[in-house]
Length: 401
Ligand code: HSE
Figure 1 (spheres, rainbow, N blue to C red):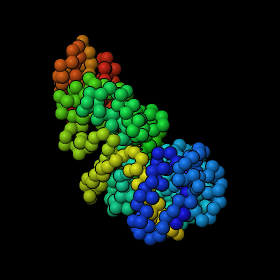
Figure 2: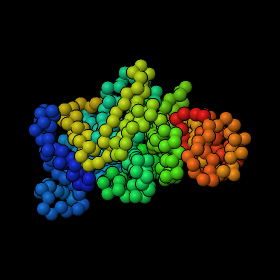
Figure 3: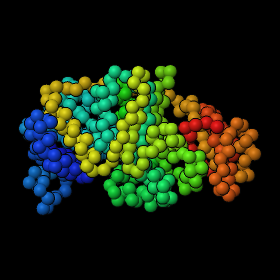
Figure 4: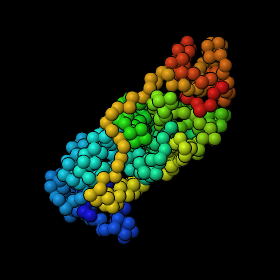
């Protein structure tokens, strides 16, 4: 199998490295030798061993019939989409780590692969090195997926862990995550929850077999979480995690990415640092959890290479993947039920008690504030009540008052 790698950035160079490091065992598992014929990048890499196979022109790869599988690790939707589509139309399998591409064009690209009897694989697009796409598509196919709960963004989990454990500021923790190569080129995608939203869209599309558009998902990031919130979390014995949640309730699909306070009973509680974890609930299986490195060069590259091996093992045969372009619209977010941890100025304490009624007060010795956890209510009911006072911050909780 001769492959080409589009984009020699963090993940692309990782793919070349993993293929080299595990060359022998990879060949054995794939049933034949896998070698990199081309690397495409706009840049030059003088002195780098890939110099001899570096090309700047995509056409060289597209037109070479010897290339049976293309790895796309460029990121973004263009030109990645055009290149991937052309490769598939020319009968080359594609393995990608690019969640923006998969979330937006997954249904169409899978359909082309089906028609051409090749494969479009994207294990690394969610959860970095964690196997989650193939389990959903193969091991859990006997299940109806009731719920997916995940920590699927390494950068924000790294930041929240640093804030929780070391009292670090948001800014300092973000900088460190960027230096370690976890963050997206634009950190907004991580900290505003959009990266997690794209990953949830992919998981939900695969779980329910229909297109979930990431723009339709309610997304909140972690930029409003402060060290004061963590003081209360400590008193409550809770962690604050950026959760991606998708669930089917009475035929309604609810999807949300938002920070949530969770307690020790939730297995996601102890997922720390750059690690990711996805908890899947099936109707007959119950819960199953996947855990591992959610970002970073080699873990993500390892998942891409596993896809290349899968493509090599399935030449001339499409692996059935259920994901049609028929849209699955999330239900109205206003109707979703949640409970909330709320902080208001001390002067609003009486008002809060009157408006929210049954609440559980939380004291963390923060001067001038009143904090509490509410009963479960719809998002709309919460917003109406919160509008009666000055809310300093609110975070959804997994338990109610
Ligand atoms: N920026 C992403 C993260 C990279 O932090 O999880 C992996 O998708």
